[in-house]
Length: 556
Image (tube, rainbow, N blue to C red):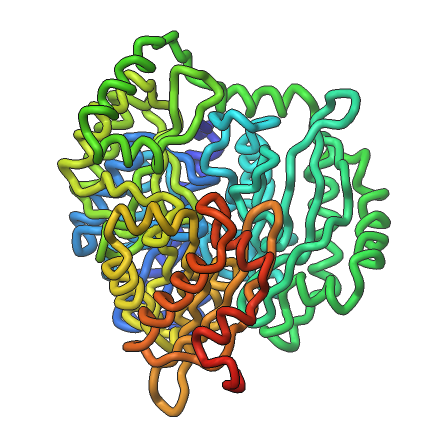
């Protein structure tokens, strides 16, 4: 993983001290809130419904045990003993005191972490496939390119005050696990006929008030042109993106109003001037940064196969966990472990300080000191020998982290909602807990199969409800909470925006509605191998509308 050089250390240290001075002046009254707001946002500090919130960057979702222990320390010392992992592969602390935030940032800097550009109208944390560098289906590890983009975009003088926030995601496998088509820029690593590395470039995706799927504007961009072409896109957006209306300020609106072909033409004009400048990436630089992300020295561990078969036979819970939470690694003697942060009836994405410490210990002993955060609000151990899986499982069981539900109906994505967020119209957390409890039986989850539920407490879509197989959007109607249901969304390589199924449901009726949808699906699927999304795409919304509202009801 990437390690700070001398410049990085000095830059982050200076930024912490600069913010310390700003906080001191704000607390003394010398700096008014209106002037302080853009300064704190560029350092990841929000003012939420009840308290300040600090969002910490975890670049492309990769961190080590030392860094995870620091996150636990911060939760213990400065917060209420937990942190919340987000869909941007970050972590949020919901209860820090403003006066403590400079000390928190200093503690983060001591382990090569920061909160810079986790908010504000700038380029946010660059995200990547959480299985990057380990997946069997990978063309190339996307994280070196995400790191190059991180270095280039950090406090970029030209792109620090964009029309609106800007999000970039990179994936290196045919299976898109980074949801690149609902990002402002999505980059899909691929090889051409000559075996050269490059990118398919998607622009203008996003969720929120106006959900849109990104348009591919270049099928193959050579890796050396990554920064020059990205800069060209940013310049076109910075020049023409709307600043008169924040609801129309994202690049997706520019792509929609301009047209993908015309936007690509404008980008090409800028690119022609930038292509052979200092932005061109030398192969030596690419190789140097790639060396930080080299695969660990994975020794042969063939004994794991026989042990695994024996352990699965002896323990049904372990067998269920292996089948659901462990994926094939590029090395046959290893697996990629998903640590579910979705305990039955729990809060999606939350981890206590003790749990973070335990994950750090397990990663250090069994996973080459490497941890990932997924955009689905879970943690990943990317390199675990099959022979060590039983020991890892036992450790996770001891801390309530062995829920075998990755990709199932209880693996719910949910934003903090009205319990924390000043923008929310409705609660997300209690609803996710109720749904999780209703469907918590392992046998029932297995019968239902892959089904992704995603919940947002407002139209900003931080819970990614638009791309949930079942999406729930909290809205306010006549002073009461109401939930709109969408079906058929997906954030993978076949991205789709969910369709609104009909009128909304009161909070106490939502889980029953989900039950009706699930039972309808089970009754119409061709066979148990046909997952919910496939069945929905085959039959369309009408059977679900009929089941929810009656065949003659008019869906509002």
